Length: 147
Image (cartoon, rainbow, N blue to C red; front, top):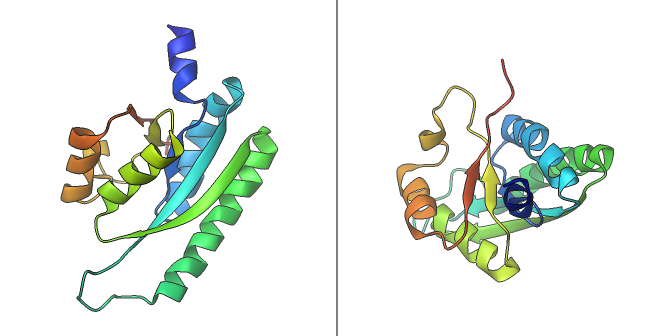
């Protein structure tokens, strides 16, 4: 059983949405990835509005992603875990994450719940349904840090 669990963390794709999410996800996932001697791909999805005006410019969202990735890189280095980061773009967050997981042959999609929400509400309705219903690989929801 331990080897099956370890295999989930050999090369996970880890989406992060904001600073709190990046910290919580790193705290939860990095020990497992380190134990598996794995590496992780951390992604941030810049959701395109699909014709509607975006609330923030693409440049602002890319800057935010860079800040999130700095947090991830620092914590990964402390844990001795190799990490790759990537900004993804798409109109459907769930499909964008799944496409990247397939492209990279990720061992799993791993995340933690956002603060104050049940895990089911981590992503918008469409994104969470896509991740749960359409994923061709395990989706692992780790408990977030205790408050």
